[in-house]
Every structure is written in C-alpha cells, then in structure tokens.
Image (cartoon, rainbow, N blue to C red; front, side, top):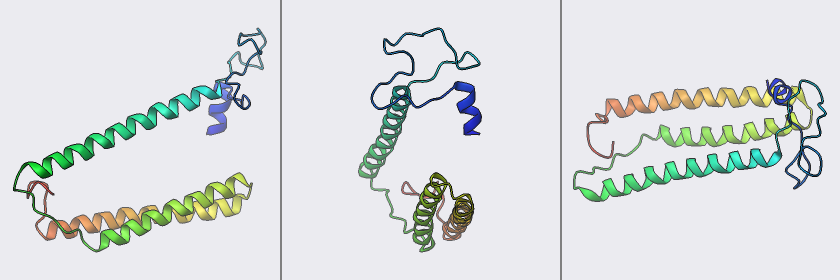
Length: 153
C-alpha cells in the first residue's frame, strides 16, 4: 500500500537538509515526472511527526495530571492490586515490540521470508496480549473490581 501512496503523491527523498524537491530556488520548474503531482518535501513529514508527538505527549500529560489530582483529592482511593497475569501481559507486549523491530530490519534488508516469520510471531504475540488482557479483566471482574467500585478502578 505504501507504494500506491508514494505513487499517488509522488513522494521522493529530497536530500539531506534541503527540504525541497524542486529546483534550487524553491519554485516549480513546470516539468512533471508524470501525473502532475509535486513531491512532498521531507520537512513536511518532520513537521507532521513533531506536531503529532507534541499532541500525544500533551494528551498523556493531561491524563497523568488528572490521575494525580484525583488520587490526592479524596479519601475514597482504594488501591487495587492487578492480577499477576497483567505482568505476564507486559512481558508479552515488550516481546512483541522486539519482534516487530526485528521484522522491520529484516524487511529493510530485503529478506522477505524472515520478515514474514517475524511479522507472524509479532501477530501471535499481539493476539496473546489481547487474550491475556481479556483474561485479566475477567479476573478483576470476578474479584468485584468494576469501574464504579471505587476511584482507583
């Protein structure tokens, strides 16, 4: 699919630090490499990623600050101990991060067979994580921990 996107938008690598894909003066030279679409400058991608990361960081900062404020406001905060299965789920999630990175590197190296193997393992780990989350939530439910139980839930 990324090839179709690149073809649609005529995405090209614009070189280190130049930020443009056209002539040196930054204007459009009237020539087209087909389809009439202009290349998107590398700087636009950097800006988009920077703005997206800032928005994500601000969102999580808001969640964290609301959590801290709510925890300190009242005496109704009861600590809920997570099921031991959740720690296993954390390990599965970290392992899947590692396997997808190996898959990415295999893809970049052109080793399609190894890429598919690692990608399949990542998919299985993702499914195991989802199943573990469901089982952990069922354990919490069986222990009587619901959203309405207390503020910590």
